[in-house]
Image (cartoon, rainbow, N blue to C red; front, side, top):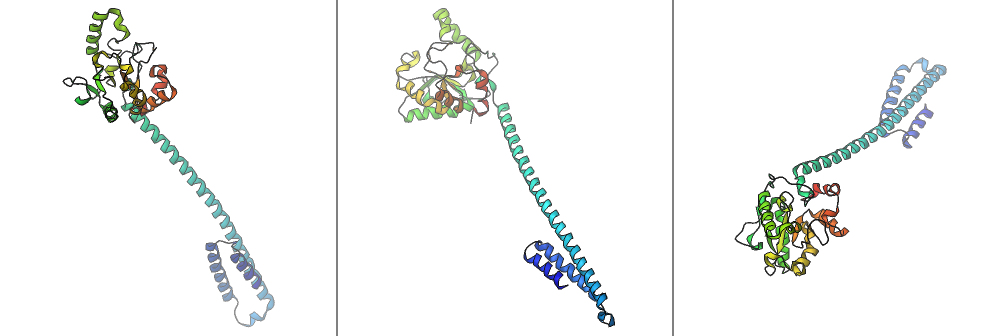
Length: 306
């Protein structure tokens, strides 16, 4: 009996049995001792050493059996802890997957809400039908327009970017003026007709047919300065043009028709909004909008107005 108790206490002190299991073991031992005490009557039979030894052996066996059960339970608890840890890891994996799905859903919603036409390559490539009009148009402040008696409009989602660009130019003492912005299908047809009358087929070098003009998107503007005026003559030599080359990409604008492009003559005044990400990448790579494939351009639609 003493040996058994020492063994159990030794296991408890050396943490072979968990705190809870130790407590349970002590209770069980107490119950066994109590029951045994009842069975061992303090009468004449206690003097029978053989019977007492048998009872002590049985008690020790029962104690050993209890210890085995508790150790087994401890192993099961360890297995349960492993299973719980694995379940938590699986839950974390599911949470990460759910977050990725949410991100994808957010992107799909942004794409669905963004007009895909806004990054299409027009200019003799794609055709924009006569019914296309931007969802919302905003009026450009008259202090930034060439003709302050005329109403110039820009795509509502582009308006803030354009205003920021014009304000930044003003802060840098650059007197930029918008001389052309949104033009409807019919307005483009009238303009191209007038150019054709004056210049014949030569008008194709600088004016798009209706349905092929970036101006119909409402994301494109032509800039000038009070000195250059409506002829655009010499705009490429102005500080305004140099400023645009260095800063327009910060506001999401890019030059549509650089020198030696395959569509129209060099138009340093013609700038199109394509979003900051695309404008930055075009500038960093030293290329232009129409140098990219439509597939590569479409990747930027989700972040067009970010």
